[in-house]
Length: 68
Image (cartoon, rainbow, N blue to C red):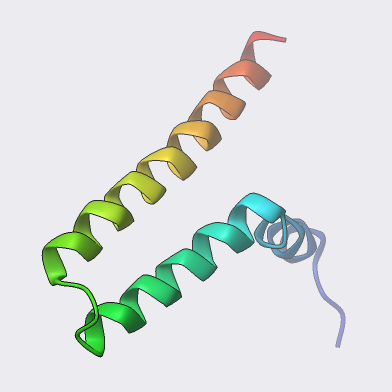
């Protein structure tokens, strides 16, 4: 089975440190919310900050790439 170049690039992007941290934080905080260690409101606050940072840096990276 041959993997296309687009799929390879997508997998490489998912394996960046920033992406792994975002995914790990999401899993950990989701688990903590499910078992009742943190409230849903606390989970939403942390998750919103992490996702906003992740997508904000991705947007800025794409914007900087267009300027070059």
